[in-house]
Image (tube, one colour):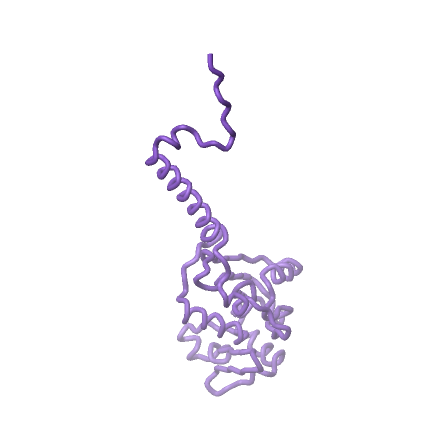
Length: 223
């Protein structure tokens, strides 16, 4: 009985030698699997950052003061810590569009504080963030009659204007209010909602620029 010759471990199986069509099927199957893995790694797992990501996420060294201890470019975490320190109740609504290499990030957060004290007058404070940087604060006082005098005394930059609306730009800060108009008979008859607004125009302009160039994409609200 003849002794069967032992095959080398690198020698291909018999079907590979005898069936050429099967060879191509195996090669195509391996190429498909390899392509799928590379595509998933590049597109799904690591889509890559847009080249202008830094422009839309940078933090400056000269933020502007807003309401109370808050200043522009504060992160959501920093603001929450400040509110928690004052034992204030608030809600947070984050919006996170899907990451893509086709456009820079456009993450937004809104914090609403139901009873924030400003010059000892409580009111609703709404804080807006763009890519984890505070860019706008809007305060609506609950007691307008008591608030108007305290606002002008506490912040002399907001001078009384004839039309009841005041707006000043101080460097990158936009500061505006309509409390004088809202407190008039005409304002009350129209049901005018009083407000004071602080905006860092650098961040506001950046958000507007994003929307002009990339078109706002709806994001999924995180629970």
